[in-house]
Length: 140
Image (cartoon, rainbow, N blue to C red; front, side, top):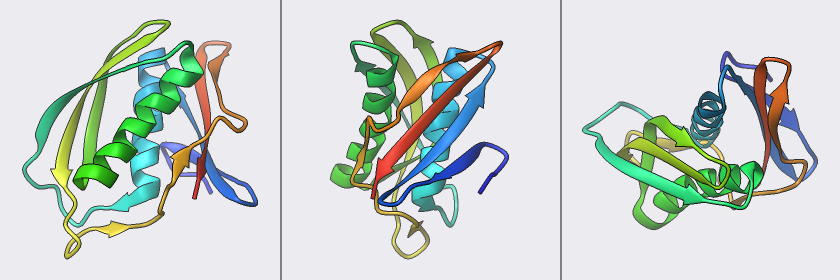
């Protein structure tokens, strides 16, 4: 399935997606937004709290996994979902972003997919010509 933001990749035990962006920062933002759209259907946008997020990793792949895992942690531990994300900077081993969060409300919101983890299976982030591409698989 393809939406305007991402393309779903079918897999026997997992689900995956591919996103594209004009910059490294944009491909991380698009990966996060695809992740959110796959996991949740929010009934409404409510009062948002802006939170700074910083993750570290040894390479771009680990940064991507750690970045998406941060949102999984926020949902699992604090019942917070992200409605918007802006990546401020990406270096070789660190990513800084701002995330707009709101509480998950079971009366209005739906969990579309229960994700256990972001995997390294067939994980890819890199450039093809002038376009950044990320491919991610999720353990469900």
